[in-house]
Amino acid sequence: MPAMDGITLAKKLRERSDSIYIVFLTGHVEYALEGYEVNALRYLTKPVQEEKLREVLRFVMDQSTSKKQLMIKEDGEELLLNIADIVYFEAQNQYVMIYTTDGEHLVRYNIGDFEEQLKADGFFRVHRGYLVSLAKVKKLVKSEVIMDGEDGEVSVPVSRSNVKPLKEALYAYVENTAM
Image (cartoon, rainbow, N blue to C red; front, side):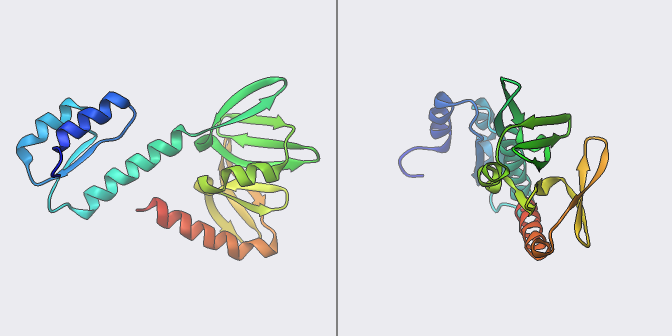
């Protein structure tokens, strides 16, 4: 970098935030120790090994997903749910039951609101009454999806019109997370 070296840039970034992931990619191994002074996540050398780069990117993606939260209002209290803990949503009249890895939450919301809010986070509407986390899908069997639930496997119905789009969404999700 012509204007400043990577260590100086990393120090400036670190002054702004402790939560930024810093990964050095360089041909100068002798600066590796300085990289750890700024709490660098990794130090990759050129030419970079594709698998090492994928490993770092996968880690950063997993960390950012696991930190995302959803705020809900249940029984007059506002709760934060980790998005990574949500298995699926089930519409129940004017309410939505949220099934997570550590319990259930009944809230007065519209399932469509959750669908729109969580689309970018790997959720898919499999049926008019169900929204599932693609990360928790174990398998697709005919017109149902088997989810990894709180107490083992859970079966969620898939409408006929959503079987093919669900398969496509699953393939795309797996491809993106397998980066």
